Amino acid sequence: MDEQRLPLLLHCCCGPCSTASIERLRELGYEPVLFFGNSNIHPQEEAEHRFEVLREVAGHFNLGIIRHPWDHASWLKSVVGHELDKERGARCALCFQWNLQEAAEEAARLGIAHFTTTLTVSPHKDSPLIFSIGKEIEGFVPVDFKKKGGYQRSIQLSKQLKLYRQDYCGCEFSQRDSTKQQQADGHDAHTP
Image (cartoon, rainbow, N blue to C red; front, side, top):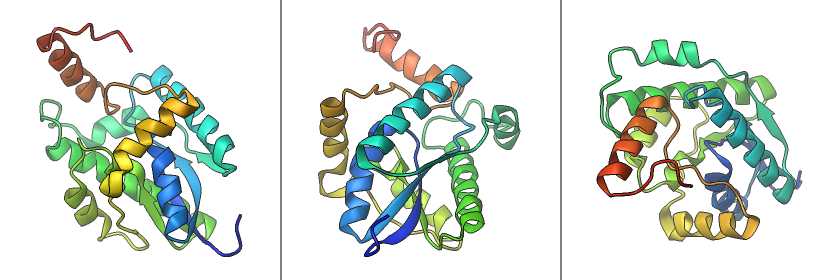
């Protein structure tokens, strides 16, 4: 780890979103430790695939990576009653809370004072909502990674590194909605 930079635990939703986030955090004076919990991701094979892609990113940037066990059953219990919510609704807020709290607990366990999330790189995610949840948790650093061309940079880096880019956020509910949207747009939902 660079002695000039402050350690920060970076909750990573996936490898592609992590690329530009890592660059930005280093510009801001942080040295990220990558964290993959993401019990929201479904099916388990998808979670495994996303973790493997994140390992590639960790290797490219020479960073450490930590993984929590996948516990989708517990995550599902945390969103009961919100299965039909649309993307950016109450279910997503509960999911952000789950992932940010899990990251905060891991940062505390490791003695890392600061943490943040790659979730804000996506134009499909509500950064102000993520920040409002995060500010209630000690150590959260609000960074809107989509600013300053962050999302476009993540696409560019993903192409350079030949990374798998998924077409839904993670849970079976976002996958359902993504599939419906792709079918409505006349696209084959199973084509990468």
